[in-house]
Image (cartoon, rainbow, N blue to C red; front, side):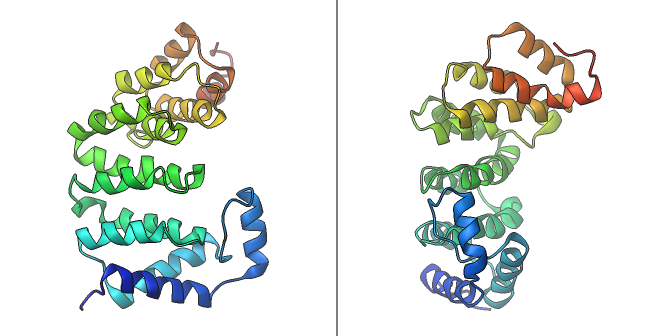
Length: 235
């Protein structure tokens, strides 16, 4: 199968998705995202189905073409096109090179909101960081120092799915670096990251929260799992 070039792939994507647009779903989907983005009105199960249909029809792009296709998806005005990036890239994480992190990094500040950042950072970048651990601090060290809150959130969430492979010193350091942030999405991310890590190392997380000045939201979110498991033992 001859996979079409990224422009042709993008054009076919838009054609297929437009054929399944549902304005009755589009309006509430846009409202949920505070009307920041246009939607075709395609829910997640249908979107994944259409993404798989495209792959069956067109094949997977080569790595260099996949990166360009991802960039083109972020230029399409309909939000589902950005979500398709996750559908196309996640199944290919095991074959992508470390240089694909440059693509992910370029997408984080594009049309940024929690819905895209929360798959770009932990799912795509995170999947690559697990394969190329030497790149973790190289990229996230830049992100946590960025004035862009979405890069800060990305740095904090980059190890969200690492479980026992989490670099705890790096995670705790990033949370402390932004502990004075007034941004909801940064404070929430810190709590979420702590909560996930508490599932494999609850004592370390509880000790970290007890011994550092952290925002109330971060503490609350970070202790949720611990509190469910041991309601009388948390601070």
